Image (tube, rainbow, N blue to C red; front, side, top):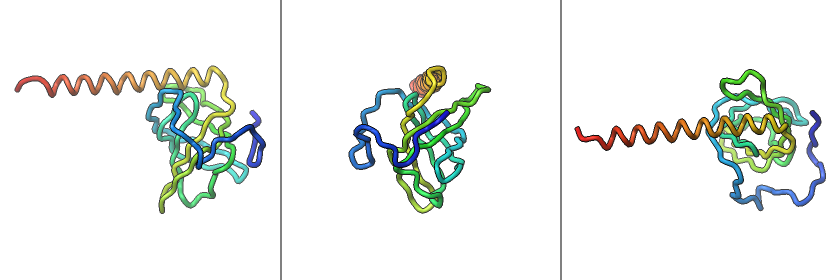
Length: 143
């Protein structure tokens, strides 16, 4: 899989300054590791949440900034054997002393991988909804 790297020219690019919260896809929490390869090398990070259009992950603040740039990503979805491989564009980074939150949008992803992510998101959100409903039901029962 080939990806565009830093400095690639694209039509009007969303930047940290002009990004908006126009989410097209349903998101879900995902606590797995992701290998993120940039021009500067490979980094290991932890995914916070994901949708079929992108993800947000946490990494060490001591790593070099990724924004603006492109990444090759590889990660696994729970209960699936084959890892997802995709390319992504970094759209935002927020750092404190210890960690850096990085948000990316997928620029190249196989339709089967997008479908696998979509199924995971639906499964995860359905499970969280049932858990919430069950808890509310138990809390509403008289003692």
